[in-house]
Length: 315
Image (cartoon, rainbow, N blue to C red):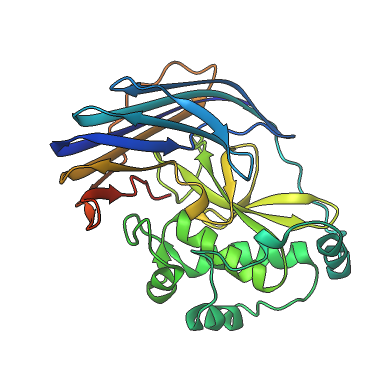
């Protein structure tokens, strides 16, 4: 299936700021089951955009606007071919997984990370879900995927972009970012390499997904013996099934925010996001209203009076 993805991010500043520096992770990856056929990035006001790869091989675009401005509009457009991921076969054992972990370098996806750490509430959830090594790695991961879906309610704006998993664990509600972090933390405690995936989810007309339309999405990939990295989506209780469009991989959200930057000035900022994912052969969709609008105040660094904010969008 070939998808067209349009992602529009707008930042408004009041009053205008003097300079902005920003990095973007918006270009879909190319791997064994996905190919980014075309990608175009536009920034207004115009800027010299540089490109590099980070430590996980994600494409990062970086730019600096060194003049006064009250708005930045970032528009990315991509054409992506995604193959249907075959259902993994449940033939691998815990011993097989341990052998893979012992022979390969997966330590970064086994250690606690900024948003995927153990806590008393996480330990309580692990006991509640009987999250111990049993059956097979794949069967347990499938149970965790469904259990998180059943245990937590999807409630937009119930947590923030920098919320730790304890907030979702306490309220039993959150968004896909929270559910991905919870599953990653539980899996890593069992010595299952698990990583965070940011991207998009195509919602067909008959889709019953909980995640909202018009926004980016997040899920996880866990290493399964005999199957490799398998995509699990605890928000919607499904596997990667040809509708998940992968943009970036990381230890957790801190590694892969779609946008992140700093600016000079004492402005308040407003962030709005609109995402359109459609089949490539479908009629060009109309411009959508933003699915999310966030307002924030700057955080000042006393040393140089430089306002800093993480211009990010929750997934």
